[in-house]
Each structure stands twice: as C-alpha cells, then as structure tokens.
Image (cartoon, rainbow, N blue to C red; front, side):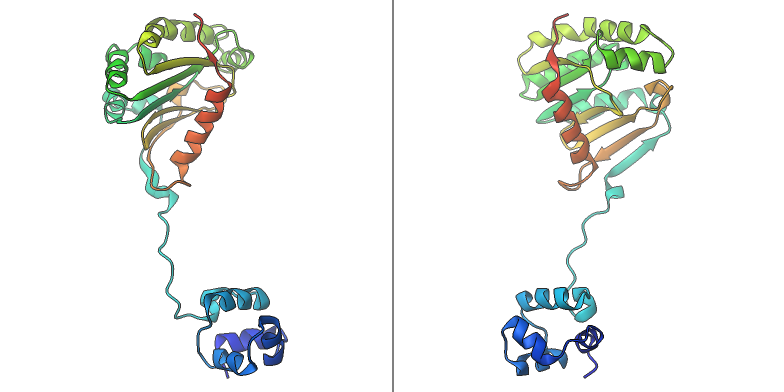
Length: 243
C-alpha cells in the first residue's frame, strides 16, 4: 500500500490498529482507506489531525473548494495622489449610492467647496439614502497634532471650520448627520454602498499629496469591509456638531 494516506501514517509511526482505535472503526475500514477509498468527511478531518497532512495531500482527487476572490480584485484603480483623481470621480461615486454614503476625513474641504456635492448629498438623502459625515473637531488634540505634522499649525482647524460652514446646513435635511471626531486618521474615506475611495494619510504630507484607492467590495472579509468597520468605530465615538 503506497497511497498518500498509507505514507502519511507510516511517517507518523501509526498503524492500522491505532487508527481504528482512535476513530472507533473496523481495521478493515482503515485498510480500505489506505488502498484508495476516500473516508467520510468526519474521518477525513480526524486523519488530517492525526497525520498533520493537508486533506488534498492525502486525497488528491478531492474536489477543491471554489477559490475566494483575491483582495486585489477589489482594487478598481490606484491614483498616485488625490490631486490626480478627476474632479468628477467623487460626484459619480456618490451619485451611484442607493443606500448609504459615509464620509470620514479631517476637513474634506475639497468636497465641501465643490458646489455640486452638498446639493447631491441633499438629493440622495431625500431619496432615502443615509448620509453620515464625520469631520475633525476643530478644537481636538489630534487635529492640532495633525496640523503640526503638516506644518500648517492652526490652518488645519481653519480648514475644518471652513468646510463646516458649507456642510452644516445639510444637517437640517432628514437623513443627513454630521459629527465631529478627535481621532488619529490613517485614511480619509468616501463610501457609496459597496464602493469606497480611500485617501491614505502620510506623515508630514497633506492628504492631497497622498495616494487614493478606488475599491469595490467582493466579499464580507475584504478591504471595503475593513474600512467600513473602521468608519463605524470612529462614528461611534464622534460627537454631534455644534458649530
């Protein structure tokens, strides 16, 4: 008997009687496995544990499970920096939303200053889309530290306050909520259902000079899901805006 299972058992120093006793089966059943018959799943799992071999090494003819999409399948496009993202990409992403829009940033001033974006967010909210915007607290410690890192000092808080002037009126629209956070952000996020634009944060460089990933979800365990969970944690600790 020179089947993979027979070789695996020999290398582990286990004989037919040992296997039969451990699995509570007849020794003849184990002999049939060693000559090529494939055991039931519960016995296969036990033999994998006993031998330390992988199931497909023991039984090469087993059908292989469907492979999950690679994480790279989520990446639609990579921009070298935010300034390279065409200006209409953000609006087109938001326009596709049917259920949820989430924005997480320090200021998102470039969105707030785009006259079409606030109007688009209001339109989406009127159509039943939940819109959540989390911006930095202008008085927050982490926001001040980020301003120092970018060498703009209080300029970071000024940008946030300027963005709030444009976005604060949206909060009177049912379905739109604006909160302020004092969090260390490693990315800014703009999510529209299962698509998301992720703007990396790089120490000492403004977000406009950092890469942007356009992702589209392919699984519940992918990158979009990871970033969405990150947003939820920040959102849960953020406070209502009182500007």
